[in-house]
Image (tube, rainbow, N blue to C red; front, side, top):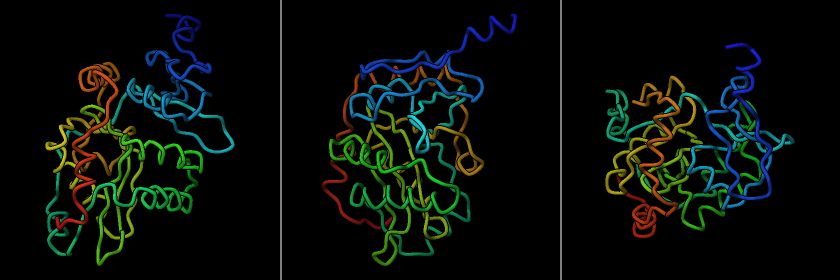
Length: 247
């Protein structure tokens, strides 16, 4: 294949005003890898539609909204979560408590501020507003970890059908974010969640049992696990019917 033919196979789509405008994931750029589209907005309808097709927004102000669909997707099957001996020991050592959807705005706030302190953040005020709205509508969720009544770790993401799309996590105490993920994996069966999208690979996630899934396989999983855009009522009910629970 010539260079020109290879370049023609990839394109960066400028999203239209329609919230259902959908890039072709197989035409995502190779450099930067996975970048598929630019523009659009963070309305609930567009976010849910594009998540259901495997796209996620990742950009920094003042850049325009950038939408990504990596060729290799980092995913975690909940029952494949790997708890090391040291993590199991840490779980027993402290009086950990967990909750679901009890402190969503605090979780996304910590995720934003702690990342900003380290490397700058893509979790802008617009992102926080958009995902807080998704949370109030029952699509975005948070898992919280507590010690002595203090929020010390957790993560947030979007749940649809049998999928959970993880967005960001934080930890104010050693192992807190790992324990949050372990707790969620333990709850996943009751919520009928079969796959967690971790987006981009990291040694941290791979050590916990995540793996790389080729784009074709990830898209096939989305079709199977999200037959239609609907809330995960099981996860919503856990948040409504329980407060802080011991691990």
